[in-house]
Length: 311
Image (cartoon, rainbow, N blue to C red):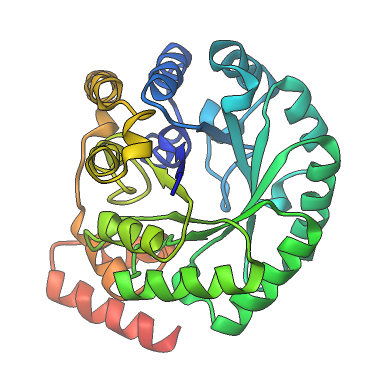
């Protein structure tokens, strides 16, 4: 089974440094990612994340100039972008394509996703390969997965990603959601894992076993909170277990990139902040992290339990 791999370090890792990656580092990162065999490099959000971030850096803005620099470095057919429909206008997708992006992922909520469907149709007409991300999938009802997956596929989406934004899925959950989504669309399904509970690799393996063929990972796991599926671990796993992947994925450049990241970006150092572990346990989004900060961990756990109950 051939897995399409997307490196999301520059985008999701931006939550750790307000998306302030130096341009020269971003270009080197993308080049080494391609050498490692990744199919796509997701270089940025277009016009920001879900919530505004003051003084957001280049991988949070996704300006045309930055897209163009990346396309010149690695070729347009490796350049991916992601966006929230509320942040863009009808002018953004044509501009992104002209600048050199060729894959776009559109983040859809479980309710109020109609504007996103319009952008799926527009992106397909322009020539993009189009995916959708179901954000905070651990909180979606099965009926919503069916409805939104059907609507997105009908609008022209090429693949659907299950985004474990809260890092709360178990391998059993991941298997069930992957199976459900594939049964609805009949098309490719991917996983965007977070590692709050240390289950990102186990969930990735479960997703692939259930039929997923797209996978996100980041170098050193750098991403929101405790981060994503660790790219180096994922490549090593595929190298051991998938003969087809072993012929096109190269662990050496990924390890070289890991060293470069740690030497260049202090926020790239792996960590598991205790509040993020608690968020994962109680399936709470990162916006509740502030409620759990402080030295009294027992009080923090009690607060999380209460928030989960009243959600």
